Image 1: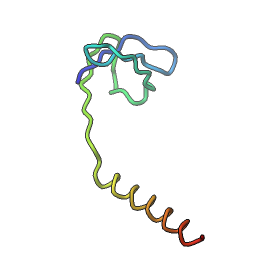
Image 2 (image 1 turned 180 degrees about the vertical axis):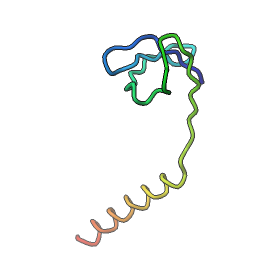
Image 3 (image 1 turned 90 degrees about the vertical axis):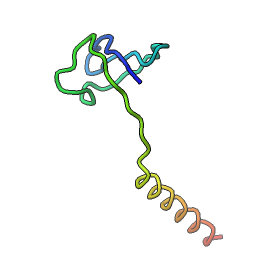
Length: 70
Protein backbone atom coordinates (compact mmCIF):
# COMPACT_ATOMS: atom_id res chain seq x y z
CA UNK A 1 0.00 0.00 0.00
CA UNK A 2 1.24 3.47 -0.76
CA UNK A 3 0.64 6.84 0.85
CA UNK A 4 1.82 10.37 0.20
CA UNK A 5 2.76 13.05 2.69
CA UNK A 6 0.35 15.84 1.82
CA UNK A 7 1.51 18.42 4.34
CA UNK A 8 2.71 19.07 7.87
CA UNK A 9 0.54 20.65 10.54
CA UNK A 10 2.67 21.30 13.60
CA UNK A 11 3.95 17.98 14.92
CA UNK A 12 1.61 16.00 12.63
CA UNK A 13 1.96 14.90 9.05
CA UNK A 14 -1.20 14.67 6.99
CA UNK A 15 -0.77 11.47 4.99
CA UNK A 16 -3.13 10.42 2.21
CA UNK A 17 -3.41 6.64 2.07
CA UNK A 18 -4.23 4.46 -0.92
CA UNK A 19 -6.06 5.27 -4.12
CA UNK A 20 -8.98 6.61 -2.09
CA UNK A 21 -6.59 9.01 -0.32
CA UNK A 22 -7.92 8.40 3.18
CA UNK A 23 -6.52 11.03 5.52
CA UNK A 24 -4.30 9.78 8.29
CA UNK A 25 -2.69 12.16 10.79
CA UNK A 26 0.68 10.76 11.81
CA UNK A 27 3.06 12.19 14.40
CA UNK A 28 6.19 13.34 12.57
CA UNK A 29 8.37 11.18 14.80
CA UNK A 30 6.89 8.06 13.17
CA UNK A 31 7.98 9.08 9.67
CA UNK A 32 11.34 8.17 8.16
CA UNK A 33 14.08 10.70 8.85
CA UNK A 34 14.15 13.37 6.19
CA UNK A 35 10.57 12.74 4.97
CA UNK A 36 9.11 15.77 3.18
CA UNK A 37 5.83 16.91 1.69
CA UNK A 38 5.16 15.02 -1.52
CA UNK A 39 7.20 11.97 -0.52
CA UNK A 40 5.55 8.64 -1.26
CA UNK A 41 5.61 6.12 1.56
CA UNK A 42 5.33 2.36 1.29
CA UNK A 43 3.09 1.03 4.07
CA UNK A 44 3.40 -2.54 5.19
CA UNK A 45 0.98 -4.12 7.62
CA UNK A 46 1.92 -7.33 9.33
CA UNK A 47 0.67 -9.23 12.34
CA UNK A 48 3.01 -9.62 15.27
CA UNK A 49 2.00 -13.16 16.25
CA UNK A 50 4.13 -13.25 19.39
CA UNK A 51 2.67 -10.00 20.78
CA UNK A 52 -0.86 -11.01 19.75
CA UNK A 53 -0.55 -14.33 21.56
CA UNK A 54 0.92 -12.65 24.65
CA UNK A 55 -1.96 -10.19 24.84
CA UNK A 56 -4.52 -12.94 24.38
CA UNK A 57 -2.94 -14.93 27.20
CA UNK A 58 -2.97 -11.87 29.45
CA UNK A 59 -6.68 -11.26 28.78
CA UNK A 60 -7.46 -14.95 29.28
CA UNK A 61 -5.68 -14.81 32.64
CA UNK A 62 -7.67 -11.77 33.70
CA UNK A 63 -10.96 -13.41 32.69
CA UNK A 64 -10.03 -16.61 34.54
CA UNK A 65 -9.19 -14.55 37.64
CA UNK A 66 -12.55 -12.77 37.51
CA UNK A 67 -14.36 -16.08 37.18
CA UNK A 68 -12.56 -17.46 40.25
CA UNK A 69 -13.67 -14.44 42.29
CA UNK A 70 -17.39 -15.23 41.81
